[in-house]
Length: 135
Image (cartoon, rainbow, N blue to C red; front, top):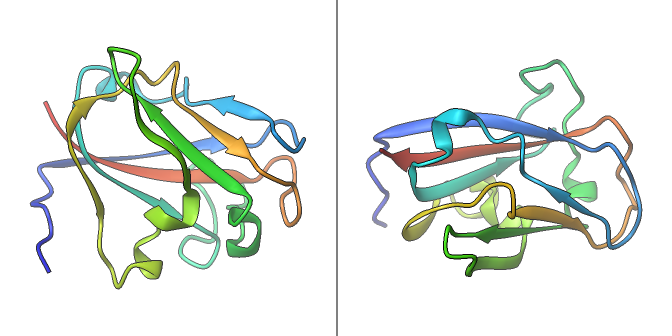
C-alpha cells in the first residue's frame, strides 16, 4: 500500500461547544500555518488513540465519533470532501493508512464538521485532526 511521504504535519483540535443534531462547527481554529498549505492527507483520532488533546481536553470517543461528518471546502468554494465519516480518517480503522487527497488549499473558515447525532458526545470533548501538507 502506498503511503505519502510526510513533508509536514500539524495536529490541531476542535472543541465541541454545542451539542445539537445537525449542528455545524466551522474549522476556523485551523492554525495560521495551514492557511495557504496544500493539503495532502488527513488523520483524525479518538480517545482510543489519544487520551487527551494538546489542550488537555477529553478526546471524542470512538462511539461518539460515529455521529460526526467532515466537510472540507477549497479556496474556490468547491466541496472537496462532503459529509465524510470522521472515523473514515482514523488510521486505526484503515490498517494504518492515511486518507490522501489530490493536493488542494482548504478554506478552513468554510470547512466544517457536522453532528449527525449527539449520542456519545459531550460538550468540552475535542476532535483531533492531523493534517499532512506541503507549502
